Length: 160
Image (cartoon, rainbow, N blue to C red):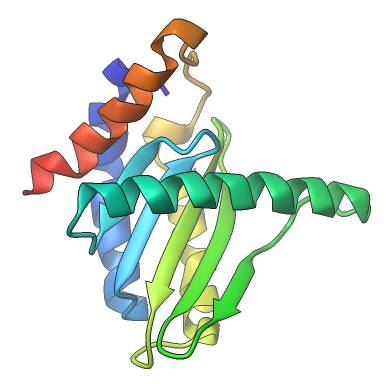
């Protein structure tokens, strides 16, 4: 997504993310596009954590999509990992404009069932947002890194 489109997208996603966090009691939520560009976040305190999670989630999404195709599935639904103190949930949201990925990290105050339940509602809300009604022009190769950095500036630094 181009740098000039980010203000509209970040503003449109702010309330749905806050609603999702409130309903599910997740500790951390991150929305990225397929390239790993940050579109929204809740709960991170360090910029490098956002960058790390965004890049790993983009890679996990690409791998899960490829594995789903190998099995003949139309799409993958979600990934869940239950750790000893925290759990991770990653899932794609298909909008008319593009696929975006939700990363949610939660502890014993929530459950994977609760996250799944509200994820479906969250995905519907996001898909209907004006910012995701039609595909925006993508960044060209020379501006790709600048536009990735712009995502962090828009959602992380403005919240400080």
